[in-house]
Image 1 (tube, helix red, strand yellow):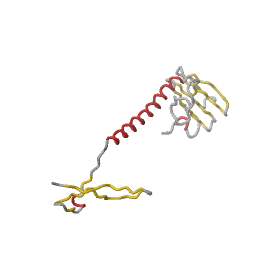
Image 2: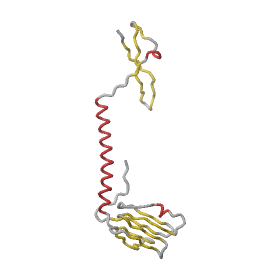
Image 3: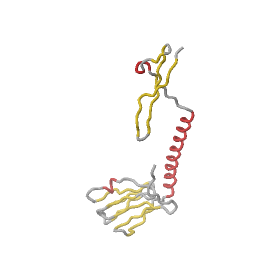
Image 4: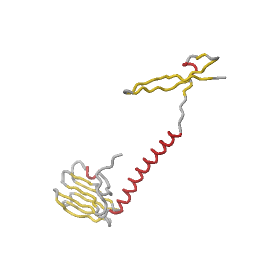
Length: 166
């Protein structure tokens, strides 16, 4: 009949906590043999471990879905965008219809398509406003520093959320 003896092996100190992996030495004829030849490492997942893993997965999935659905519902409420030039309101843009708007005497072209906004063309040197791409959610903005212009999505219904941290 085989029997095993539990012995600590591969101990590691992390801060003030000493963590050891339990190894089992096989007893042959009632005598402990060399652990390096006959050590059997056993890792068991308990019922509590499974419950904790499932809870963490459900919680994280719920948070991600809530945020994604919140952004989808929020984008349906978006109705207009505001263009600011030199810190003053320059123009309100309706997002209901597809259109192109020429701003700043032809220096910037803003495109509205499918309740999204982008800067299609700009004469600024680095083209950062053009490379920002489409914006569609409340609070998102396109900023063109050389022309001192900000295009921001606004909605009367949805609250403005600065950031979401996970």
